[in-house]
Amino acid sequence: MKNKIIIILVIFCTGVFKWLIPSVLASDNASRMKRTIMLKNESKIDIKIIFGAGSINIFPAGGDTLLDALMYFVEAEDEPEINYYIQGDKGFLDITSSKDNAKDDEELNVDITSFDDLKKNKWNIRISKKVLIKMQIEMGAAKSNFDFGSMRLTGMKIECGVSDIKIDFSEENPVKMGTLSIKAGVSSIYGSNLLNANFKKFVFEGGVGKYNFEMGKKIRRNAEIDFSIGAAAASIELNEETPFLLKINDSIFSSIRVENAVKKGDYYKSYNYHENSNYLDINTDIGFGSFKLLVGR
Image (cartoon, rainbow, N blue to C red):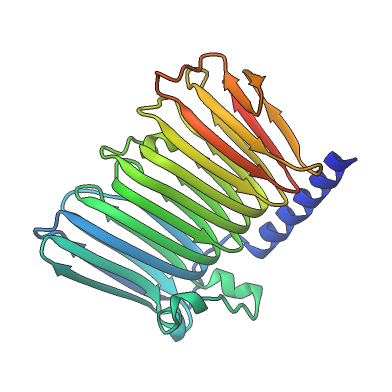
């Protein structure tokens, strides 16, 4: 009975945010803004992106380009603002829409008077893969496609509201990342090749929706995953060669499935787990939802 309730709730919520986030195309009457920033002597960049509603895509840039942005917007209050300055060998890049920039971070909310508002804004952004990057992204109601492959990311934080997001690390991060953090509201998220992020810790907090994370083929060092969901359907997919140690905190309302592991006490251990080899240490907190750890799919 509880599994049927979970499935019905997730299907309902998935339908809601797919209805909220239609396919996003720039309107015929949209204004167009293009901005390019070239690297100088910077060795590292802090980037903060605040995006309200619409479509946002981020990909790696080539050559000495720090930023290559092509943005469409309809309302003047949605005109993007791009600010960049350098202190020593470090750059600071802020990208935000005008109305969001006027608010304090703690007051950042998306006011959508019509679902047509979601179609008005489209940002296409390319970011350097030559310098160290620490990135923070905040989104409201957004349809997003992110490929961070080969970017030199030392830290990544993503916060989203009602969103449909694809995240890919298509190529290996050549530097060690500290924490990869994702916090989602009513969202659909599909992540692929996450082990290419080369993170020390992956923290995920999900509310309502559907979350799938395919980790990829190669684990490079010991890493932690802290994974918590509310009323959601979530899965983590591992390669058969990736050892793991899994602890699950669940409730009577949650549904759990773990493959290729033996349960010992409070832990699931993969058949190839050994504490002296590289492995994933996974801790989960599952509320009114379902969680699957899938192996070798």
